[in-house]
Length: 252
Image (cartoon, rainbow, N blue to C red; front, top):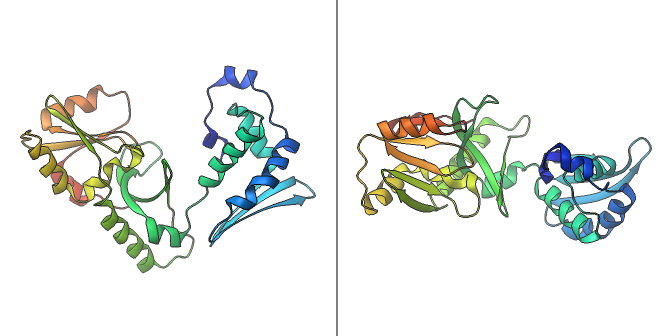
């Protein structure tokens, strides 16, 4: 849960940023954090001899400990305003970005395609949990039984079929997107025939269909030659693959 969570706009805005004070953030945190605690989520504010005021976030096996001074610095870098309302909204964003517990992934996880490496050269299936307009990635906790991991993934794959999306045809290319959470667009590929049926219903006959996957962006579908051109022209990292390869993709 790093500073990038709040956004940011480069060096110049940071130079002009008005610092978020730890004292001001503490006053807001004392007011709003109790109301954010719900269900299995516990939030508390404690004083540490070395770090000063610290936010403790606990949900099942997940535990986050963050000094308020670090949060204040992150918010300053992201140009978060210093009014109580702006600080409260930023704290809500921070809480929503907390790690996903195993039980929550089992209950609400959805399978999507995501990068499997930092170099963004391959994609695989990953379980995410939607919180508002964001999809948070789940990593199994240390020591979680392999059979439990498999059950969580299987259930997430089943839920992916019901995610839905929006289809748009642009010439020989079909674009499939999610209207609210971009990362969820690829969930449809867990049941790829659903997308092929939608494409056929739109009147487009794709021969030798390929997909161009750019996680967190609309999914592009086209014939082999057009898909190759799309992948070559995009300025983003992407993966192009024939339809038959989807069945061989592994879990990240």
